[in-house]
Image 1 (cartoon, helix red, strand yellow):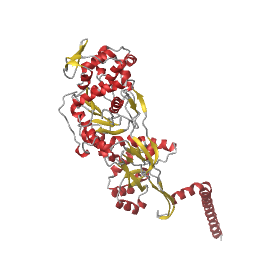
Image 2 (tube, one colour; image 1 turned 45 degrees about the vertical axis):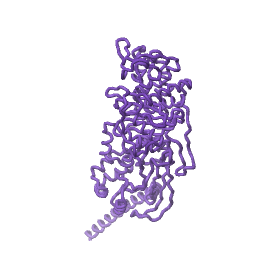
Image 3 (cartoon, one colour; image 1 turned 90 degrees about the vertical axis):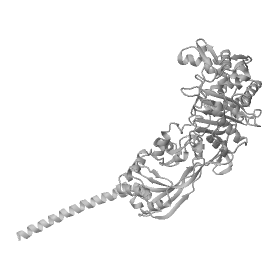
Image 4 (cartoon, helix red, strand yellow; image 1 turned 90 degrees about the horizontal axis):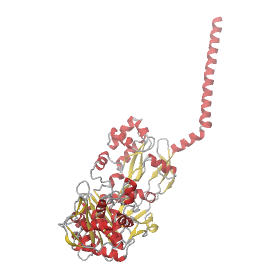
Amino acid sequence: MLSQFKDRKLQLSRINQLMAVIGVVFLIMLGRLWYLQIAQGQSLLEQSEANRIKLLRTRAPRGAILDCKGRVLATSRPQFVVMAIPDELSANSEALHTLCGILQLQPEELQDIFKTSKVRPSSPVRVAVNVPMEIVARIGELRMRLPGVSVELDQIRFYPDGPAVAHIMGKLGEIGREELDRAQAAAKDYRPGDYVGKTGLEEQYEELLRGTDGGKQIEVNAFGSVVRILGEKESVPGKTLKLSIDRDLQVAGLRALGNQKGAVIAIDPQTGAVLAMVSAPAYNPNVFVKKVKIADWRAINSDPGNPQQNRCVGNSYPPGSTFKPIHAIAGLINGQCDFTLACPGSRKVGRRSFRCWRTHGRGINFNRAIAESCDVWFYELGFRLGVDKIAKTAREFGIGSKTGIDLPDERMGFMPDTAWKHRVYQERWYKGETPSVSIGQGAVLASPLQMALAISGIANGGRIYRPHLLAEAYQSTNLKAILKEMHPELKSTVNARPEDFERVRQAMRLAVTQGTGRGCNIPDVTVCGKTGSAENSGIAHAWFVCFAPMDNPKIAVVCIVEHGAHGAKVAAPVCRALLDVYFGKKKVNQIGVGKVSVSGD
């Protein structure tokens, strides 16, 4: 009996313990339910809605870019893009290998893409672009095994003429972390993986070219299948830009430069509109519209020719003898050009002797000095003027200041004078420094674009216009809805008489018909030009500047060939190629690299 009582008591004790455990568990469950439904209810509801409702983003096409005749220089094409979140995929070895198998990538290659990405590890990264439908379907079939992986409909940039427009268009690149933070702080609709303009017009007019993304809001079930479409928003393409660039001149410039390193630029002297801007060697901008392969990037980045460098605006060089027309205007302004001398091939200043490129002999006057590019005559003019008067006129032509062109990263150039020498070196200007400046050497530096503006100023009577590439911007594809239109903007005026400019133009005409610029003498076209060679640490750079027609100039062309030695032989033919195409003497496909057997600097 006592034994039964003890057993009964033990059973009751165990029952009470079990009830206590059940009570504790119930209280825990009740607390958990309160926490999930009351404390965290709103947050979890939002997460549930986010998992149930998804936005399928449709990226807007970037705006098209057209040449002055409406021909396409840049456009966008639809494509499928594979996106992956590094954190989710790296933590799931099976998913990583599955995706690599679909994309035919090695895991190391995929990890390299993640490492080189400039977005946060928790944000999606573009890992494959322009993928075929077979891959899209395969990823859709295996979506449950590929967490963090998605496929989006995107737009890929395309440049039909590739390298010919590389330095004008610039390049696209994936938005960086800092760029994304700045964009989001400014309430701009940029997201990780977006491509933005990094250089050139793509950067300059990013706000216009970028469109407004659209998409579909869908409801999915637990298996990721679409239940219904809740809403849809059409994407809006970016604005269409029409440039002053003539596609034929652009292609002709690249063909004429060939394998030479240099630049050629053509502008309208009456408006400042840029008709062509070519830098060589060039690169293919289509490489940058998608994820750049490491091998492609290394090939471009390690090229000793620096193909990404826009030599038209980003480099400055001594202008050499192409500076002489500017110097001549300074001489005419100050009444110092009416003299004749003999050129023995050099001019001695103190113990130093300054050479001329040849011995010109007796009777060198204003016209012959420009036409035959006599250094000795300009040395004498420099002594008569002094460096400050030369510098004053050169600055009126824009030498030593930015042009204000609608491109980023423009180089300024430089024009020395006595004040600069004293400020920087605490020294006075010595007479022996003037001869170098007189022929565009020494500390004088100018970009090809600055020289194009200067030579345009001589062509049009001293008006220096701000250069521009954009002609008009339109509302998307509606070419009648003009949003922005460029008009000629006078930047500065050269303080010289009309007869001074006319005198220089006549001398430059003689340079083409009888002097060092004969390689650019085109039948029925009154070309005025000037050759030049600019000394540097190696072989001299070759220059040629020109404009035509003489009486009513419509085009000014400037070319520099790095280490080309003589502008008369290698730079003049490049300018002639553009003039031949502009005046209808040749078709673009007839243009090639040319040299002429003309002696000159």
